[in-house]
Length: 346
Image 1: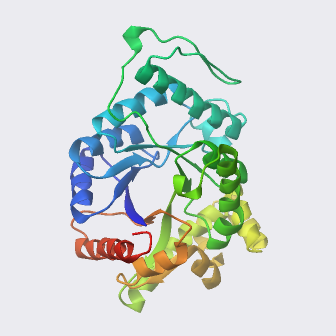
Image 2: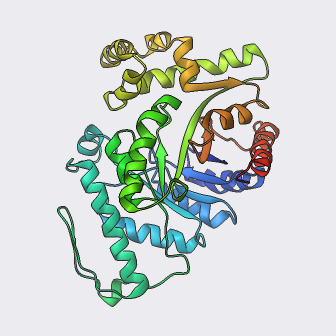
Image 3: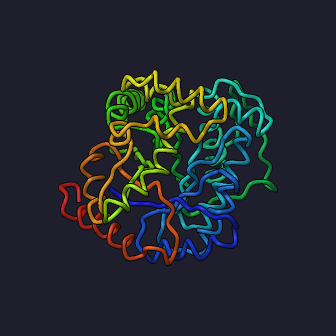
């Protein structure tokens, strides 16, 4: 199991220092999310200022960008990073696609499938000189003159990961992708009963095995070497869980556990903007299902025990800040690496 981190910055000028520190402390990979900054810009800076780390988008929103735009971005980042780049894509939800990005929302699973196939058609043209002739329901790509062809690169097999919650996205990942970004708002039961069976369906369709696809996720952690530290650390985690649980897109996770009533209460509070009241509805039982609590030294073992055979890469739902608790981060990373060396797979 690899341990990564998610890059969180307020200013892009902070990226080089953070990326170099993340590599120095020992992380396996670093992911850039599409929140308040473009994740491809962040990825370019990470690629320039690191030598070893995997780097990727977790995720970039696919639909506001054309397949060709995505293909060019990923091609350049694969070349810049010497093959360390992972293209992570997601659909976002209808409200954000239509009202934040201003583009049409339509058939997300089918459209994302075409995005992936169209990108690979472009990459094949650039690498092997094949005629570009992609014709789908949403996209038609038939023109690639030499002036616009970037040509072959040394690492053309760019891994594509997609994110999702529902069975359709999980099946698509199993059929076409190299990895799947599991949403942080998950449970072991949901992974076992919903996510993995759907991924296996897709893998069977493509004739592949589970070890040909990586599952990666942020994990809610409540770290603290004393009880007061853990209590303090639990408050923002309850708040984040409450926010996710109130969102209709993630209703299946709550309903699987029989917490549909709580989800409805949370949704009503969110609709009224009563955010401060929501964390109190997250019981200790819910917290233990969605988060892992313990001393810093305990967390790696607890995470590996919980997610053995389920996740291949993890990151703490906790920002890595250079110079802040570096020893604790380094100890956690070493624990993961030691466990991997002594595991049967290692």
